[in-house]
Image (cartoon, rainbow, N blue to C red; front, side):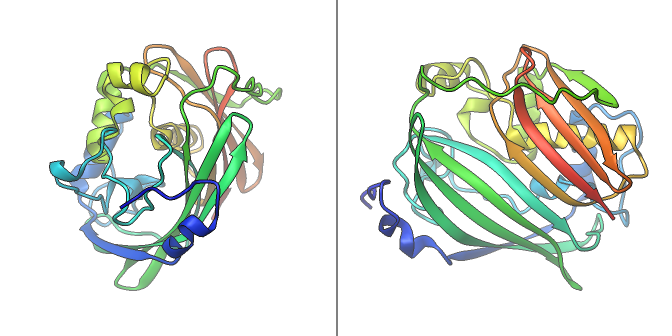
Length: 286
């Protein structure tokens, strides 16, 4: 299949509205491994307990055969996601609504719909945004809805704009994290994510132009929500809005911060070692 021209909406119009479904068991062992990766010392929630926020990302995982993988380690484009020619793929953020709890140990299903494919002209070159809508269901119906953005872009540009600094306000709680290659490997294994930028240093730096191994955007979000749970253990998120702004890398410490911004609201953010903003998360409680 030939690659369509990324400068036109018409090239991708037929991809909007496509759907696919996947079934899974919300297995306790997966949550145990997440707890280990987050370095939690308390016992992980077991069968019958609510699935922790953002842990749905560890289930309903695509399992493409080795022969169907592209050079970047992802499934080759053109089966469900459109065959976008731009080489770099990144998760840009998600808006998640928790209508009610999915229970650990239950059977569940995820239905995914391609909502939109939108080419745009960025300051450093062409971009294509793919918006996905996920519905996660158990026997009682839809429990979690997520709108997720994936962005495709060209090679790293030397003229990339300077990132904004983190908020000037004083955080109420913080944590420093240095993500090493083992942490990134473990999260890649948890999510069956073959993207080489997270574990193949030669590929990440030589082919995609990054400064090191890239910390998964969803892992940063999980670490931020985990910080919230450690700091405000009675806070039960009902809505989580995540916006990824810039990548973080292994071997260098980054900082997680948060504060309560109202009786049922919290703001979280992650900064690189220079204090520049990498991710913002807004959370509403039940």
